[in-house]
Image (cartoon, rainbow, N blue to C red; front, side):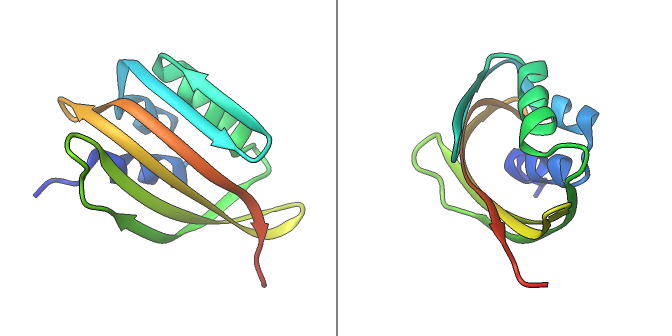
Length: 124
């Protein structure tokens, strides 16, 4: 069985792989994200890349690991994946947890809704 598009999305973010993130997104992706301070929308891969790597995870944020990953059972045509990154930046070590509901077509995300915990301090 091949790796899910959701897992490829998470892996691309963890590796800070811009091309890998673009590759997992449909050209007309319907993307919405909710972080503690803002809602995000994009309708193409560049918009998603800008949100994820230009705002959510900046240059000073080092994604140390995918600390937790859970692929849920589908709800009709919609998949769910939950994941937690261990992140270190100038403010110290943090966790960032996200839940994503998504739909795919031809191995790419065509619809994604992401909810984020924000940066939560972790011991260490």
